[in-house]
Length: 276
Ligand code: HPA
Image: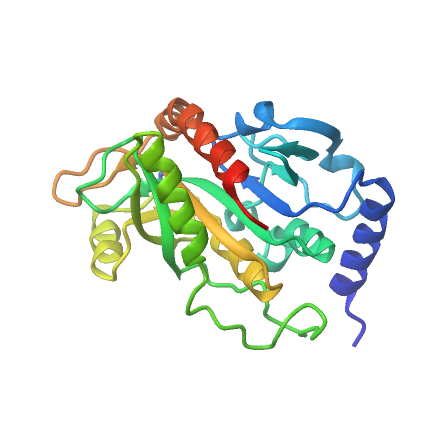
């Protein structure tokens, strides 16, 4: 069976190899309302997604589509400014295509951020949460279908999807910045409708601390590719099933934007300290 996906990854990687100023050590994805980090990066090259062959097209206005090669904290990185979601109609495989392509550069670390709803009632809006584990409730998996052993194993182990050492370093940085940092389990739901109170109660019962509509497919691809992952959620709202308030997307974006300066500072210090 001809694998068109495999061919597309090869073609896009060949293109990026031609235009890339360097091989990046770190890949970063920025979530909803969290694009400020892009301003802090010393940009070497900015390419709109629309100019990259086979890249998906974002249908969400809050996500600008640009691939940015640059440096921050002395590290060579590539930033995916704007991501793709299952709710836009993409399969898990298609929405994680950019990461699959970038993994061909053999980066060491994948740093992913998102805006999420808090389920743990000790959280408050604006909190930062390090992801220590996830639950995938998106009814799809990016590795479904033909497996290419050169990309990774058929049955990748996810017992330590979120790297302990990277999390420890991030916590140390947060302490030095006197920033409180939470830690918890992220559950990915398909969206785009937000949760009902009953669903919120269910998600909490199954062990999640925060809920969102992204991240997990990309993390699975990163682990499959042997890349270490650090995930951070900005808690944009807290959903209490017994005192449920409407979840307004505008509020989500606002809170994420208010938190992003803190997150940007932490990531910058983190990259400075990171030993590759
Ligand atoms: N639910 C799902 N996704 C989200 C939320 C939420 O409450 N807040 C931000 N993204």
